Image (cartoon, rainbow, N blue to C red):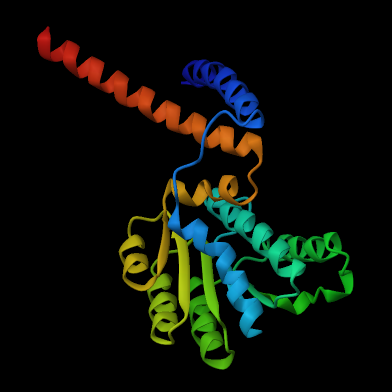
Length: 244
């Protein structure tokens, strides 16, 4: 298995480098549209207009566990939203369920305000540790939406059954929700309560849409190329077996 992984890596790296150079030269075209990612910047604008905070959750998992990738996807979205919020001095409420995520989220907000020349605008209480228990975390968010006038809800990360409590409560309060997760058991609840969704790999691709870094865009395009390559291989193998 290690040999196969090494072969795949050696095949992928040249494609990644090639596509990165084409992206920097502006020769790759546009990424396919993701309505949820197109809506994310507008959520900051809405918060700025109303003066009400936007809530952001990066999931119930932490950094260093099995769901680290989902957590980093949420933190990537938080980085972009924090930068836009700091630029227009828009209030944010960031909630976390794992103590390993708390200092990372605080650092993201602090650096965003510093980049925009307003370090005193950072308030550490914007990032709130609710509970390491997913059910208790959901209960905390159910109380939050009833206690504070939140204008929107962006949730990108790892979520399980507790999402049903969160999503349904916030939907009943009329809060517009953008949600991204990859758990098949949770996705039906997301579709039922969220206004815009990021499903599976779309959540991991969010960084390419927000930061627009050439290497991230090239990585996303490389994945698309590999997907088509796998489809072609499967079709060829199936055809050979059928006619043999």
